[in-house]
Length: 432
Image (tube, rainbow, N blue to C red; front, side, top):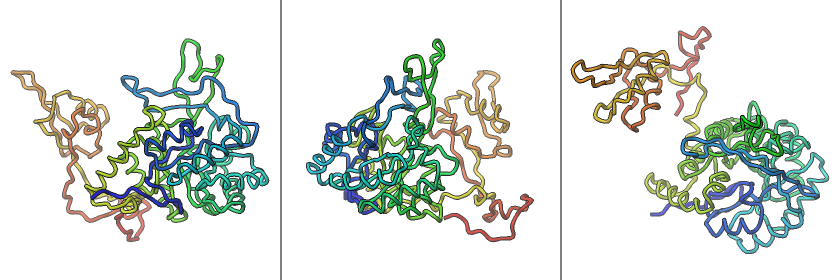
């Protein structure tokens, strides 16, 4: 049995949930056609704006590296499309005609003037595109012009512009949210109030990746100066997952379709976003770094995992982790885990010991054989608080495990805990 990867997202049918995000990989017909040939289910065309088109600088990208120059995070100061509106609309029309089974969403960014939004809607509809994404997230260049994150950071503007668009088009409207905000739920609620059919998140995060300490300027360098850019790639995935979960479990936005974006590079990343409520996912940085063919592994990996788990289609597990995501105060205070070291797998490096010793718990004992000098590491169960640090620092996967303990105590959260000076005499239902 092969899992069915097709989806329906806010009324839009797609052969699979993998879309390319609005970014350099979707800036022209040539790229989009090659993406469809590689197997992508859809694209969000690089953001269109008013004419004359935006003008970009050189250079534009920088990166935050891990070991062996692995790109952990990617930074860009590129703006929206630098090609005319007419050329983009012509290409969208032709590509959609040639690839009717693939999704094309048109990303838009305009000043906050109702007439501009009303005038562009029929032009986009005429292309045959499947939907519209409102770019309220770009953190560089465009906010200075009153667009992008300058709109996304003000819920009232989000609601206003969303409503303008909904009044002037029959196409589904997806609102792309900025992460450069204190509480992402506020603009998500505003988007819903304005009639949005879905939200997509996250857009890029304000960032400076690193500096040239000889020239004393950040990268990317433009004539001896630089600026903050939009951060994306693997490093932003934890932030994106949290924001998706916040919207998925917020009673005011529960059920609002979500397109997940941020650090998705393989099928597992995609599955995690879907489990936290995303109905489809958008990919950018991974495609830029590794090419369009990564979608083959994504589709194959997701399909195999779904078969293994018995999920026939994506809706079978989309949102399944949301009920298990709660506020800290509702976690079980009586739950306890204790670290356990498998001595057969231990390579005696001592990293767990150093981490535990220097992080105030002192719950791993270092035993040194007097005759051989061989070191052995054992957990002091009475002192172990189950923090997971030893497991995280251990270079051998599975050598250290966190073992649940039978405390014999019932579920009790912090609102009920007698150690809480503000404990409530209220029975709170345990998270599923």
